[in-house]
Amino acid sequence: MVVIGGITVLAVVMMTILSPYISPFNPSAINVGPLLQPPNSRFLLGTNHLGEDMLSRVLWGGWVMLQVAILSVVICSIIGVTIGLVGAYAGGFVDKISSLVMDSIYAFPGLVLAIAISAMLGPGVINMALAIAVVYIPSYFRVVRSQVLTVKELTYVEAARALGAKSRRILTRYILPNLLPSVVVVVTLNFADAILTAAGLTFLGLGVPVSTADWGWDLTYGRQLLFSGAWWVIGFPGLMIVVTVWGFTIMGEGLSELLNPKLREIA
Amino acid sequence: MPQPQQGGLLTLRSYVVARVLLTIPMVLLLLTLVFVILRVIPGDPVLLHFEKAASPAAMDAMRHELGTDKPLINQYIDYVWGLLHGDMGKSMIDYSPVSQQVMSAFPATLELAIYSTAFAVVLGILLGVQSSRRFHSAQDHGIRTFGTITYSLPVFFLGMVLQLTLAVGLHLFPTGGRIAIGMEPVGLTIGSFHIATGLFTVDTLLEGNLVKFVTALRYLFLPTISLGLVICGTFIRMTRSNMLETLRMDFVTAAKARGLPNRVITYTYALKNAFLPILTMIGLQFAALLAGAVLTETTFSWPGLGSYLVGRIGFRDYTAIQGAVVFFGLLVTLVSLVVDLLYAYLDPRVRL
Image (cartoon, rainbow over all chains, first blue to last red; front, side):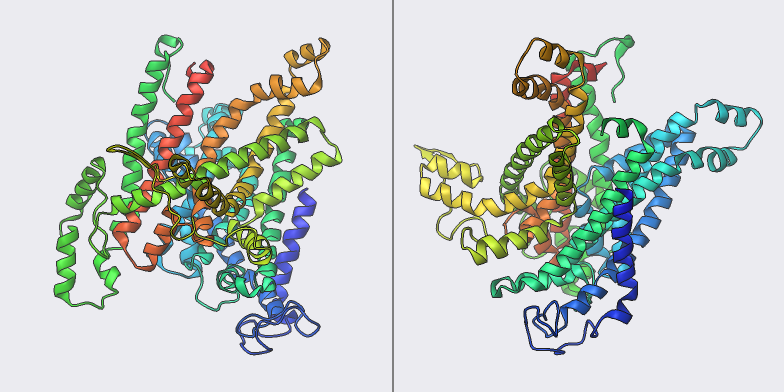
């Protein structure tokens, strides 16, 4: 599963990176062909209502989403892991407060919170990434917190403490490495969620500027074209989102099975 | 979790009290979070609303009307105090009460949520059980792949594919909306007593109008399937892993030894045991369901809370946005409270 997922993700990333070299047209150039052409030999995936080439748009369309996903995952993993580490290690009041705050963010329907934040911040890659990051910080916090609570009682940590190691050293050198495998799983699954949320925000018109070559945006205006039966305008970009998210999902699930032997035995 | 008294089992009543009390700081925090994000960080909502393109007098008038000319701390107190009384402030568009608008949009969302959860749970349990019975077979792999794919589907994409094929292509279902114009159910009136739930499938039945009922179902069908399919993956996985664990337990072996048919063992013995975690999952999935509902409603022009929220963002109606967001948060808190209490009632071990 890890391999299949990894290859899928790699293929999508490669396609996006190479898009400037392999796409036949400029994805935002209008009237490169007739309007709303179904797939044919010249325009392999057809054209949209502005006469833009859908193949080029599909090849380019991952840029924004992957940027947003990477940026948001970096932001929320750093913040989530830090708060989880410090909160659980310090215990007491700090832990209680951080847990309460994280729980109340977690209680929100993620997309609704992201919608509220991006409605305030306005569209754009960085704003979208920030809105998504806030929503997923608790996922990291929860995993890290529960693990730290177990690990910090282990003998080797106690030994380090007895030897006079400082808290920061214990946290970064002794506890953090122990958590990395589970953080990696959360990161992978988080990529899937971040992409879905980014696509959702874009679909609602809160993501990217109009006419950007983006899978989510293609679905937004594609909705107006449904009655003309132009399935290729929404079909291919939509499929790309599904494939990308699916790749990350099964990669994450595979990793989690590998790293959690108990689960592997049952599954 | 509430701690047991003197190391013993909490009575159901003290568990309920403790769990309800725990909800209060959660709710306060949630309200504060929304206030900080929507009121404190962005600054003056009136300025944002007009995009600085109104006369200072007009803006002052609106600030006064909405109470945003007061210091932040007073606004915060007004806001929490208002919510305690079911008051979400006034809309920036027409100064009508936001709580009324939210409540009138809510039944549509509730109806969609009920039907799609039911669909997801039934489909998820059926497929999950099947998957666990045929462990490691081709069927098992097929069902698991189906689960991961549904999980990866953006609900609006699935919705549009269904619209394109079943509505635009085959004309089997309407493309969007909640019911045909002029078909809105009125509910039941007996003398001076009037019942209307706002759930069209219930109200049409109360009215005794089968034609309207079927119409309401037809409008519900595509949104329900879209949202239900997207969330059913979690139920498949949950049912499968729980059934796999349960099917290995001694009481199942004992039932087998007594020669009970497989079907009986799976559905009446094992599934009953595996159902509690699934119940928790329904509660946990509720937040995801609402998030999906926002997108589903937009896709199908379904006039619920999600459409309301998205529509108000278009109008920069920040008080309405705040009201809708708070309502979503409170809804999730309420559902998780109910699920926890139900769980404690069904499984006394939780109260340990």
